[in-house]
Image 1 (tube, helix red, strand yellow):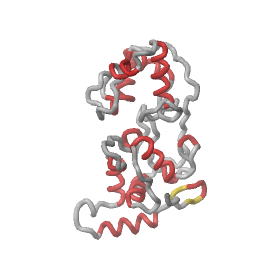
Image 2 (cartoon, one colour):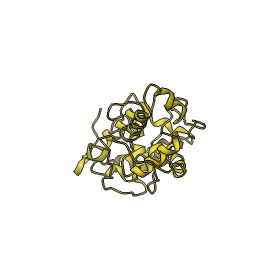
Image 3 (tube, one colour):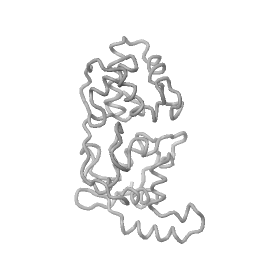
Image 4 (tube, one colour):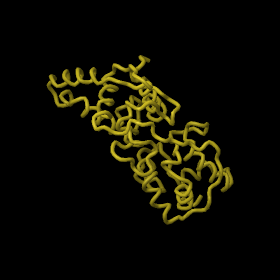
Length: 242
């Protein structure tokens, strides 16, 4: 993979190149080619085309906002992200490697973006176009799985809608993003039928807290404490009957 150009703190800086790419695009004829780099970058951000994986349904916007932080986003807003000094809770200092980690891990991309790829440049142009925070964003992953207190099932329904429905649909899987994505009641219970109720509860907590990073597998990104606190998780478990 071609390494991204860096400034202090490992930042990806491509403004001059982006200006040249935008000028070239404006000279082309059809609507798709006459989009500015920022407009095409927004399209890449909002749709699943940022990955070449067959059947991919995930976009950057599935987990990240581009305005104020949405409640229960697994990832922070990415506006200004190319100029941040670190990513993934400080575990990565190169913007392009962090971006490719997302594309491979969650979107199944087979090829990393190189620093000169048009898609990488246009996506970067969009993320830089409206300011945003250039400070590292907090991302506290829970590394020891323990039980949480009993929660409020009524409030848990609102947590389910805000945190889970954009991918999983409702608790029974209606309107889920893809048939690959399990329903949080029937499919989860069926897949873990050999476990005790107490074990199923801990497995669900592990999926929410660890995602695919600490060994359990799957596509689920981890919910850090900033995005979903233990009270929220308790209420969600109560609503799902776990």
